[in-house]
Length: 152
Image 1: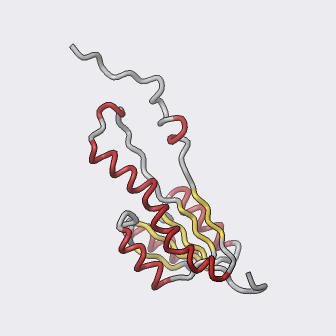
Image 2: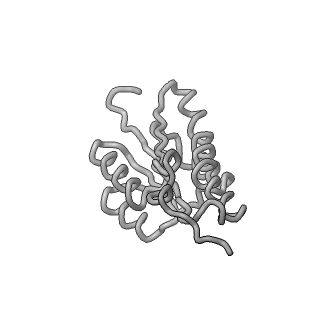
């Protein structure tokens, strides 16, 4: 990275929670921040607060992601933060819900990384941070001690 060059950071799921905190920190540290989220109201408010750009985008739409990154990049930093949890017993989860979890928690990381990586490779510089939940390792809070009701 050339000294003095403003680094551009892209944060997925940046409108709320951990993503919003990441955006605030990056902006405070002098990064030019772009955040992506489906939550238009909070994305717009946070962008105004920290002087960032924002894009309301369905991160599971790989075509939309590719188009957005191509038109808005390059980015030196990518924070793959978007994620969801399914608060239900696994044995009662429907295939559609499972695929939705995979789309948000895994496929978005693939799509955004695929979008930013070629420019990082060309310049020989870039940072990609993947945020994940402990729920992926330990299960959701209470899931280990909860038992489904007995079936007759």
